[in-house]
Amino acid sequence: MSREDDVLRAEFDLEFTYTRSTGPVIGRFYTDLRDGKLCGIKASDGRVLCPPQEYDPVTAEDLSEFVSLPDTGVVTVWNWVKQPRAKHPLQKAFAWALIKIDGADTPMLHAVDAGSESAMKPGMKVKVRWAKERKGAITDIACFEPA
Amino acid sequence: MANACAVVGVGQSARYRSKIKMSIAGLVREAAQEALKDAGCTWNDIDAVIIGKAPDFFEGVVMPEIYLAEALGCVGKPMLRVHTAGSVGGSTAIVAASYVQSGQFNRVLTVAYEKQSESNAMWALSSKQPFSPHLNAGAGGFFAPIIREYMRRSGAPADTGCKVALKDRKHALRNPRAHMHEKPEDLDLEKYVNSFMLWEPLRFSEVCPSSDGACAMVLASEDLAKKSPNPPAWIHGAAMRSEPTMYPWREEVNPQAGIDCAKDVYSQAGITNPRKEIDAAEVYVPFSWYEPMWLENLGFAEVNQGWKLTEEGATFIDGGDIPWNCSGGVLSSNPIGASGMIRFAEAALQVRGMAGEHQVDGAKTALGHAYGGGSQFFAMWIVRSTKP
Image 1 (cartoon, rainbow over the protein chains, first blue to last red):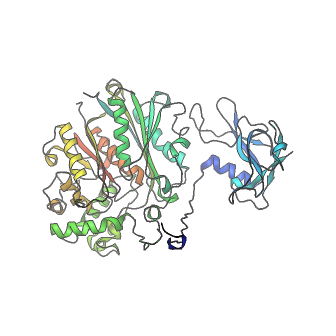
Image 2: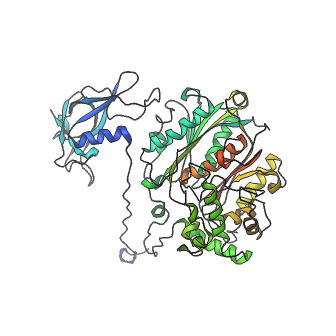
Image 3: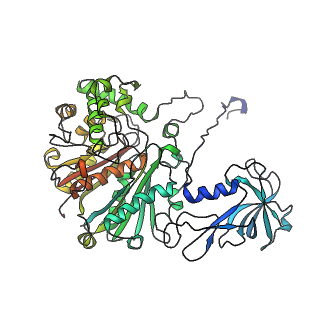
């Protein structure tokens, strides 16, 4: 049995910064976020998808009809995080939630700063809390908060 | 006895480049749509999609096949991901073909891709480890000592590698999709042998570029292939073999798995003399010296004699009796995950008579080849213009 101080230890940080071409649809979504706006896209069956998708989930055709959306929505389901981790968007207890933006037919995943678990309810109205500095990324939405 | 299967559609990126400004979904879709068009069909005509991709951590997208479902029209359809490192494009084509040969599906779309501009293969292959010196070696650093051993054994002239690279870059000028289109005045042996040393004995001029790109094929059963608008390339043999990266008696210069794989695929296709019976070959040569090494491994030349074929010009499209990599090969375009499938697809284009300016006149039988990992994964197929 080796003692604790017999064990070799070394710093080991393995990291690499990936880049990504976002394309005409996700790229537009991110650009809108930077400008403090939300957009969706119209699918072949008439549904509005938010976040938008490049290709239709039913027919696989290219999608291009963007729809401007408000920065409000409703929570469909959530998961309460009691102890956030260092890379989580909030450093206090919060909810990961699926949020259907008003005017959209599909939900998006984001954080909700509701204060306490008991404040979370299905169908609760929320609105975007925009990040102070925005740069065209999903983190431009700091989180959602009760509306 | 397996059912017959043929390549009825081929699609590739319009041009392999160092940076294609499309999403990954857009990249695979471009190739897939071209393959569908060639095959005269739509997304609805496809029964299943088989995707190949080199390691996830190259681009940092885990299980990318799931995100690509809409782009490839396969929501609600069977989809399978294949992963065998650099040989993955070849293995993926073989897996896709096996679904048609087994009768499970009648028409399959198969796709492979890489976005080297959004990844870092060098980093991914040479990550720093605690208590070890950090060797920023990459693939070239791994293969260079094996090449030195080949040179020692065979006594090949030092510039054979440069001649291979020069030949493939000349081929690339006939392929509008090739990444490397060098100026004619730069296609000069003097310049090639004086280019800077990267990994002794490999010079900059002798290594593949880092490319973005995708390749796709539509594979169909006999009935459907006979109705397809363009000539089919019939699969006469398909084989895969692998061996561990390291074991004490491993023959690294001429790997046993490659020899066994070639033997298997030739026997399926009834080939006894590959140099005589194969009209065109697309063989995975990312570093120049792998042409003479694979000429031997694949039975086109005796052991330690492969370099003579290169020196004689046997592998050049003009006047060569066994043209290798008329598309320009991996030395001219290397979207890693796609590179193996490009070899298989280019072999198919040759026997379909659809290779354009780099067509080998009257090619009836062609070999597609891919290798990956530390020369340990092999995938090969033989396609012909006639049905088995």
